[in-house]
Amino acid sequence: MDLGCGCGIISLILAYQYPTLKITGIEIQEELYTCAQQNIAANGFEKNIHILHDDIKNIKFSETDTRADIIVTNPPYKKLGTGRLNPDPQKALARHETTLDIDALIECSSHLIRDQGLLFIIFPFDRLSDLTLAMARHHFYPEFIRHVHIKATTKASRVIVRAVKNGNRQCFLSPPFFVYTLDNKYTEEYLSLV
Image (cartoon, rainbow, N blue to C red; front, side):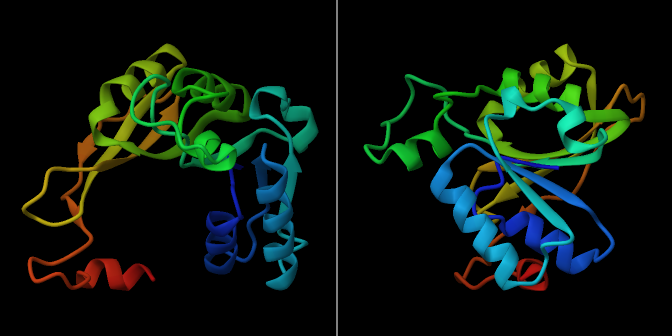
């Protein structure tokens, strides 16, 4: 499942890389839902990817046929009351926790994923404690954490976490991921992903 799938880009990347996957995306914003539907059709993945236009909080696993093995998400990352709320309602909803905070997202994920299922999430590094507390409350246990930096000279801006529902595996910290080299070129690792 791709929670808050937006235009469907993550679902499409996964479908390209793993052609046997069956993916359910969920998107609350009608414009992005329509865009995702168009992108899926344009790329010929109607049999692999199904998008639901709904609020994640309304989804029951019976609507998705079965509980997910894997959930991926790049949720709104700013707490309400922090930073400037974008005047564009679509951007505000995507960036601020206006309708869904991190605890509610993790709680919904817990209902939608099978026991021992994997949750992949990218979130601001400075909110890692909010994320780990929410995961602990809903029985997700991190097994992989990777810091994402713009450059080697900058502090981490994001964190990628892989967590297991009701897991008891050890957590390990992966080497940091750098987007740019010190001379402002994409790193080889970044280029290998695109």
